[in-house]
Length: 389
Ligand SMILES: Cc1cc2nc3c(=O)[nH]c(=O)nc-3n(C[C@H](O)[C@H](O)[C@H](O)COP(=O)(O)OP(=O)(O)OC[C@H]3O[C@@H](n4cnc5c(N)ncnc54)[C@H](O)[C@@H]3O)c2cc1C
Image (cartoon, rainbow, N blue to C red; front, side):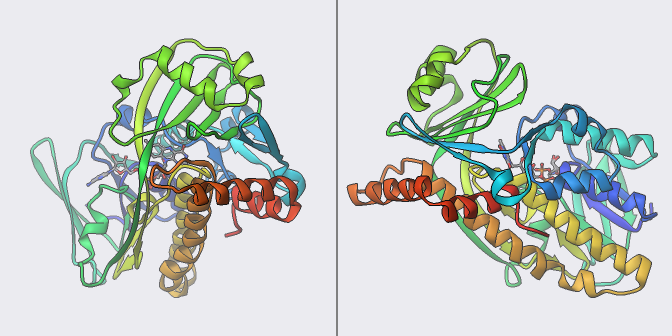
């Protein structure tokens, strides 16, 4: 096979890049190691920054997001029973959109399929060759047969556990990592959300988040020790603990009901540098991870896609390599700011087991400052709604 851009990974980064390139007449093939059903079954992010909303429009896949997504002008932070509302629209002029990553991915798959896009599922043994030459290739196995794709560029959109990042030699690549001493237990429940906006709850029992997918589908999380397993949290135990971490008024009106998904995700901050090696470009979780506090995972993936898409368009349509040459530096400059924000939000809202009384006082002072200071609220709002591309 031959294509212009071989995209490894059929998650949101890979699909969005493929769809955007297609609309500019640039050909790509997407290689995905799982099935489409498996990818669509993963319950992950749900808050879209304006940048991603705009990219969905550019990609021609915004119709369902526009009609079914929820526009949120504000978000809330609670500390015990006290609530701080951050009016992100008033402070920044922009809202965020609540629309599940599953739906984003579904819309992108549909668009790729409708326009005859080539997506190879169930691929194994993906290997990138000659990335430092002008003629890279990718080999893989499917149904016991060897395949090879010759291409101009390889986009590594294959997530944290993919093959792309590991293809960059250790002496070229530098990884930066922080692992947090807790995880998030997340549940998806067929119940109306407890509030029409998200609530990020700091409590002396640990963090909780009240989020949502639609008017009868709630997404709730609590901070748990890393040693916990989902089976340690029967539904009633989860609801009991969740109620203790959100403000009493909300706990009283919380509707509990069937939990249809329950999982635990560890929290990690991670960045690899550089994000380009020859003709291989890393995008999204392949290059960086944030703790989900601050809702930046999917959104940083989107900003990478934007920079790479711009660079590839310049290469193919204007004959200039300035964009692809600047890709790694531009993407990383924005990513580090999103990493800082996600790390800061995590410190603001979680209970760290090793913290001293002094650390707890610092956390309380930070929340008090946020409550009383509009500049602090604006700084939060600007980061939450997404820094400009
Ligand atoms: C459990 C969980 C919960 C999350 N919750 C949130 C949240 O609440 N808010 C938020 O903002 N972000 C959240 N995130 C982060 C967000 O989902 C990711 O940032 C986003 O999925 C990144 O998209 P991606 O396309 O870069 O990577 P991925 O979504 O990981 O997609 C990569 C794709 O590549 C495929 N792949 C991997 N290896 C290979 C290979 N060798 N060959 C071919 N294909 C391969 C994978 O199967 C996958 O489909 C969460 C992540 C996880 C894991």
